[in-house]
Structure formats: C-alpha cells, structure tokens
Image 1 (cartoon, one colour):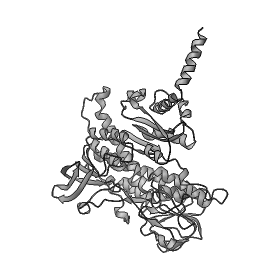
Image 2 (cartoon, helix red, strand yellow):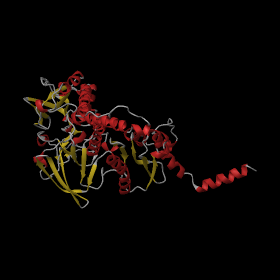
Image 3 (cartoon, rainbow, N blue to C red):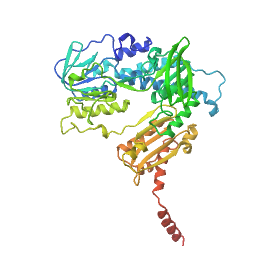
Length: 513
C-alpha cells in the first residue's frame, strides 16, 4: 500500500478527517513493548480485528499492527462504501419505477451524486469508531501503526521496536490487481481502493471485469446516469454462478443501461485529449469507445510485500500465505486468516477464520488446539446487484465432480405472492440435494433480498438439517422467504410415490363404503 497520511483517503473533508482520526490517527504514538506477547496480529482488517479483540477478551497479551487503515478494505474501500452507494442507487431506481406502483410526481426528481458520496463518507466515518485505534486500546490491545517485518521465527520489528511473541497471526489481506492490458497503466485507472474518492459522476465509465465488483458498481453507476461499458473476457457475467442465475442479473443490468462486451479480447487503451480510448473485440465485432474513467475489478493480490516472511519461515506464493486446514503456516507458531490465505475473500469468511485461529493458537489441548478446521465452515456469499445472487455449498457440476448423485429443485419468485406484490418476480430459489435423501449440498437464490434469504439454507447445512425440516418450518405470510419453503415442498412432493398414492386411493375408496 505504502500510502502516506496525506493521501490515504480523499477528498479532505470533515468526514474523512473523522475517519482518519479513528483508523490511523496522525498523532498516534506506538506503545513501548514490555515482555513477550501471547499473540501478535499483523493487519487490522476484519480477520485481524476479530482475532485481536477475542484474544484480548480472553485475557491474552495482544499486539495489533496496521500499516495503513484500521478496518481494512471492508470499512474503508469495500463493503461499507459500496453498499452505501448501492443503496442510494436503488433508491433512485425505485423513484424512477414509481409509475409501476401508481406513484405520480408533480415535480422533478433528480439524483445528486456528490450528495450521495457525502452521505457515504458520513456513514463510513460514523461506523469507523468500532474499528478505531482508540477502541482497541480500550479493549486492552497494544495498537501499533506502521510496517511490520518478521526478523525471526518469534520476533517482529516495527520501527525501532522489536516485539517477541508466543504466537502470531498474519491478517494482511489482499489488494486490487490489474490485468496486463496495453496502455492501462499509462492511461490511469480506478480500483475499489480509489473509486470511492470520486466526488463527481463520470459521464462515461468502462469497467474491466464482470465479477461481483464490476457488476455491483456497474449497475449502481449506470443507475445514477453514467454510460457504463462492462468488459468481461469470459462469456456473460459472474462466470462462477449458475448461468440462468447470472442471466437474470445480466438482463436487469442491461435494462439499467449497462453495455456489456462479453468474451472481450484484444483490448488496448490509449489516453487522448477527450478521455481514455479503449478498443476491444467482442463476439467477432470490434469496438472503439472513449470514456472518462476506467474501473478495474479483475482480481486480488495478497499483501505479503515487506513482511519478511522468509525470516519467519513462512511459505507463500502468488495466491498468498500457505496454511493448513487449521490455518497454521509452515511456522507452527504463526497462523493466518482472511484474504491473505483464503479463496473466500469475504468479510464474513475472514471473521469465521479469525475464530479458528483463536481456537487453534490460544487454547491448550484438549480444549481446542488443532481441532478447528476451515473445511468445516459453511460459507455463503452474495453479490449485491439488483436482484442479488446468493449461494452456499456446492454447485451441481462441483457435486458431480465429487461423486454425488444429485437432484435439483427450483422454485421461481413469480409464484411467490410477496414477490408479486413487491414487483420483484425476477429470480428463483434452487436447492441441490443428494439423490434419495433430503441432504442439502448447495443452494442458490436470485432475488432482491437473496443475501438475507440464503441464511436459512446455510443454517440448515451447518446444523445438518435437511429439506424435510425446511418444508415443515412455518414462514410468516406474505414474505419472500416463502420461496425457501416452496422449494423444499417441491422436494417433498417427490417423496410421495405413485404406489403410495395408489394405496391411499384404494383405502379412501374402501372407507366410503
């Protein structure tokens, strides 16, 4: 990262000054280490914050080191600012849909992008208190701001101070990476780390990568009025999701004004007097467009630079730090959690992994050491487009690769009363079960509230409850969550065989005599 205090977060306004006062106080004085720490945590994103807070709450002597902004990507350049922006764009979309609900405006309604970004900065600063250096100091954590570097298998240096530890946790996360497109570096581009510094709406915006970041922000900016070009090298959008699920979101984005170039190849970029000229080929057709800004949302690169991992005996590669199922690195006294070592680059996954680190690193055997495993986690995820896509567990192709015989059940939202009343019928719930059982192997939901609705499937999988339980669970009427019960009922109907029906029919006939 290597940012200085003066360029950490822009613009320089009262909201960002409040944010910085919490997550990287300019006048912060690092404590003086006194004796060995039970745990040294490097990185104060979600994984590091959770690890440090729980460890301190257990009574451990804890040091937390952050070189940039406490709160990490989630607070500063990820979940918090993006969801504030998305929510505002959804409010504006609802205003423009008012006629569908017989809502008529006598005056003119207009979006105010600068005010939207001010609201985002206000809320981000408000929430930052939870992740602040002051708060973690009050929890009993020694907070150090600066670059951490391992100097041995049990020591870390920060500035002129050396910290000794019994255990350590690497939670340094990952950062945006850019594809090798000719001219991209010279023309300049935005990432999730810089786009939330905008104060004016770009009239023309090209987005490279149609994954979660590209789709979420592409739809949001299109709704505010940007002419958005979304460029993806693979076919369609969100290539990891079920094709029919991604197709629903794709059509919604097109309706919102996004221009999609899928299977985009031979891209090049050139800075011109009128903007940034981008050329590419999509499905055999050449495109030549000029935009004001380019957003790159194509991948993440682990933050391992400058850590001195070699001195600590910690192995790593281009994907991050190497860990076992217990999140132990190749140094048995050092663990890792979060984006630095996981393919699940989600805040909630980092939180869950932090708790595994605590159990394995700080609890003596037989109370916990080595017993918690990442493979036991049931991790859902969601992409917050409109409609949202949420998923947990296996996809059908993955299940078959693992040798499962599977059945798939799908129920569409146009057959759910609340979705009809809400005007949100584009979507479905899909569940994957092991053939001959009610065991849930995976589930996908496409709906306006998919990120909330997926939790019922996640809980069922974690508790080893099957579709029989979900089918017998009473849901309040009318709610969109009824789609979960309805898809479970679709499975239950298949358990009632034609032979059983024949026997019952004969019995009913006999009882009428």
